[in-house]
Image 1 (cartoon, one colour):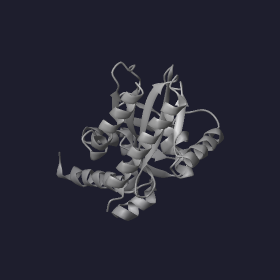
Image 2: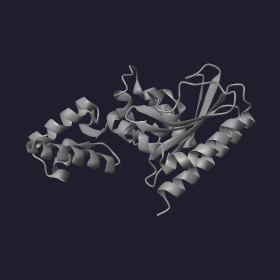
Image 3: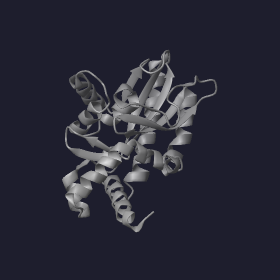
Image 4: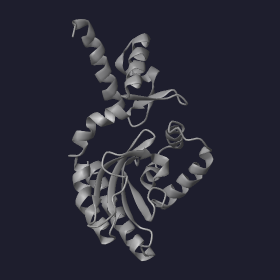
Length: 246
């Protein structure tokens, strides 16, 4: 690598660090101002990073955020994060109590990415395995996180998902989810299976993750309510320990 390439690499890393430290996607002009970069350099680097998948461009709002490739680089570390360690055993207990599966996930742009899956003995294998990505608005975990984003961010995630249809129906559903604090889907992902999900909120009340338990649709209402209480308590515990203790 020649010395002339070093400043470009340094600027790329600075952009990634800036985007990872700011909660919402930001404009190119703000990136330029924060990092004191020339305009042409800023757009050239952003275009390359978007092409490579490390940055996501939201054209509707002319903003940029971290892309899926940036998430992939962090995935090995994320499996060892306190978030995963705090969630795994209680999720396993909750899933076992209903003969189902427990999931920990995060938003990555318009998708939900599963960081952990635990299954009760004999529970069916699902598509929602660790490392799998699904369109966020099609899953209980994704919707419960989208519901706790500002409306313009939820709309942007939907618009970049490739979905064809009206956002209005999803907006109404997200409002209902936000009001009650949890989401339930039935046979939208797997036949014969339903999922209940709750958000893990950070110190800004933004969705840091989602906890979910998938169970047979035949499970009694009382049992569903019990597992919902369990993962709600777990979400609150994780929120306090990881994001609100300082």
